[in-house]
Length: 532
Image 1 (tube, rainbow, N blue to C red):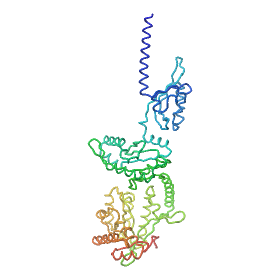
Image 2 (spheres, rainbow, N blue to C red):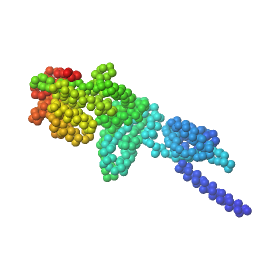
Image 3 (tube, rainbow, N blue to C red):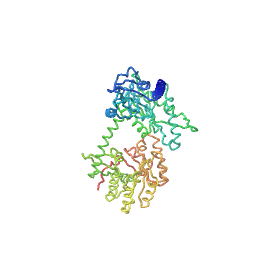
Image 4 (tube, one colour):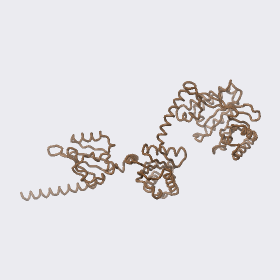
């Protein structure tokens, strides 16, 4: 019997030794705590103290709520408590708060410990730190919440989509990892941020708490421009490739809506072709614009329903006879107060909604109808967006073929448009209507970069010289030289010319002297309903 007891003791010691090794392994890899039946902490391991920032003495005897982040819904902890009190294991992700106010995320398993009678004697919690794999945006927003005066910068690789098409997914991932680790090296000396957040899609965020004596927004912008230049001048080496990148920058210094403001700033930078945007207040402005735009949309909708989208006609004068030879058809909206609204105030908004095509069709119908009330030519403005739309294109062709006796008095005035999706459709339409005798005019000639290219493609009958050149022609010799060059070219090609924005007698005399064929402007006649 003594020998048997000795063997049993040895086996027990071996079990204890193995259990201690298990405990050591768990302690090294897992965040561990224990609590009593009321939820008070009775034990924490070193990893718990390291990630929370608290000492064991500060934690033991406290409720676990001492480390819970207030963002976590109370329903999560109610579910946890109901589960473990029912002698079941609870698992889930929890966001906790460190002693310094920062947040961390854990994947938690909470187990009730039972005695031999099956009664709960305590609870043990095992957690793994998953902060590193939580969405970086969520981490960024959590960090912003903890700051009283955050300074947020988000940069975007300007040509990121092109890079994704040019290089393999592996190369792009390695480039983003390289940038995440090195991008702050290109910041000016002393311009330091607490952390970099890789937001994916070629975007990175920098965040820090501002001091009371921090530099002004203007100084920050100068420093960020220097950072931008440093990045631009660097070739980032990934494997065998040296990759050149440029970045757009948006930044804000006001906590309210700071993330939304900075993201909107990147959109503004892209839309306005700016490389850096100070984004304070952009969300508020966007909300105000949204309210304003919704009112405009409602005004457009009402005008369409009540047949208050109308056409005004501005005369175009023959500079030799000083007689009206043409009218340009221009859209107007009559609001509920019978006020005449210029397209400047509603047409771009209509393009964002579903009303633009309806307005276009009304204007086209009004313009063709006007042919029956005058023997002058009628000029109708068309964009590539109009021509590319199948319904609008078919409507135009139908009206042209139904007005064969008037086609020589129809002018389609093609507006400058850089967003042509299907250029062949536009060219084919122009070729078709020209066979019916319809004339083609190019609007705003002399502005933009594609004018002479459009001449080759459209073979126009008329050039309307851009108003910016005409309105300055009295005082700006360069404008006059450009207009004279256009006129000389047009004369040689037997293309008629129209000077827009003729606003005084001095401009008119110069236009006549240059021998431009037609003039249009408030001096000669404002847009108004066609007199019948």
